[in-house]
Length: 153
Image (cartoon, rainbow, N blue to C red; front, side, top):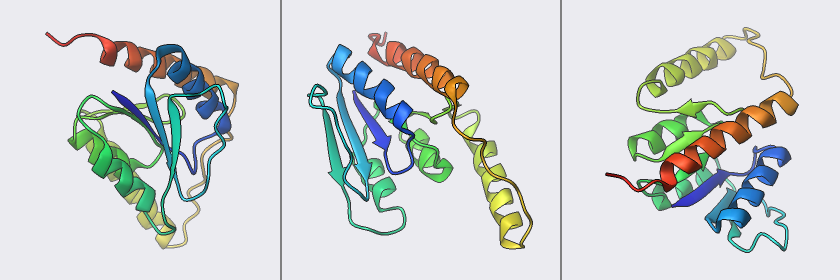
């Protein structure tokens, strides 16, 4: 199993949780971004991949290199949809899990809101990332790591 982080937009708090888990469990972790990412020296199983600038370049790197049984962290719903199709476990930085039963509706809602924004409608944005979000992410992340580490029957 590899943990993939869509790192350009991932909050620092999410990366800290991931670094601790990767170190504790010895799991290979890859941060993919258009810019260099800071990684603690103690996080020996974590590496950063810098991709060229451009729309969705980091996303496509993750899609191409991830495999069944990996875990990805992203708030990008189109990326999440591609990964779910590949049987990669996906959660967002607020702890919401994307899976085959919910990804189509999430993608549909995202596309609808994108169309609204295209007409000039104010749709609001995400609330600031806070302690409640970090706690929800850490719980979901731990739950998925435990599930993925279990031998499959």
